[in-house]
Length: 313
Image 1 (cartoon, rainbow, N blue to C red):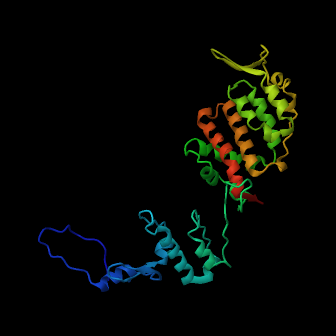
Image 2 (image 1 turned 180 degrees about the horizontal axis):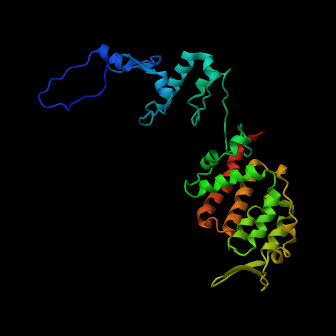
């Protein structure tokens, strides 16, 4: 039986004992382990001793394969999984699912080996409408962890913002149109912010494409005034004390009716995130500088994501 580790550091003139091939084989084959079921992945270069790795020890945890470019990292990973599938067979897929992200087509032989149990999806953002798409359920897409990864959200400020976005969607469901009109009233309330009109403009083509020209024209008539503690929008030299005073000059905007059924999931997340930013900034819940980079990433990446991801019910 092999026991790893040493009790004392070796000293000069200590005896050196060469390990036998039998003991090396015991090390490589994980002999003596309780969960001794292993898969064969090759042999050692010098002694040509078969190397086996324990299934439970490897696949129940994280693994890493390190090496220089061209040293065979991908081939090693493909070999490990290929041997696993061969060893356990089809019963493995009754309880387990495996996902390979294959940038260079190196794992297709695994698909060919199990083409009755696997799908090989080709994702391409270079084509206008993409190629094949990865199907994700709505319930899985509207998850703060997934959205944080997709849009590279920072842990302390942007991820909590996405968490609120997901929670509000679950709470209010299809009431996006009501949220839109509530937000534009808050935007022109007591705590106005100079960036909110610019932020609102970014979603006009989504929420009301037929009237986008008219709405942008109405919004362009407003300018920002800042002096001392007075920070607010004005129009043609006139200031207004209530949201209704502002909205009276934005008829096309106030007539907007968002039909949530016509929006894709990616359009919805753009609209919801943008409205939440306007609402939160106007209520002093968040700092604009902390969240605006997240909104920019959402706007920049959704076009490519729509080419490779399909949201299904």
